[in-house]
Image (cartoon, rainbow, N blue to C red; front, top):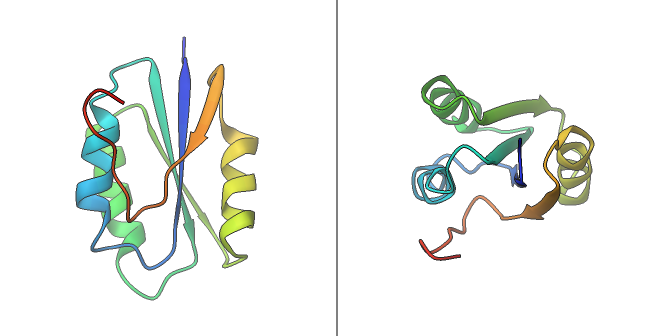
Length: 97
């Protein structure tokens, strides 16, 4: 059962995901991470997919650029947790969030 869904809207976020995603994975199996690649001109999709291959609780969505709100809305559509929250790709959370 998924308790919390993290939606991570990502646009040209290649250099930030290596700090953001590991901080979310620490939440354990009752956490779902949805990375929404909102179009990109860098390696955001490749980095996101590499994390999805390592962790079964990560989903990667690839869509055409529609803006920050569009990426969040797509993540909400696909979230299966009891609760959802959002964190931008250039942010991270502390261990006791």
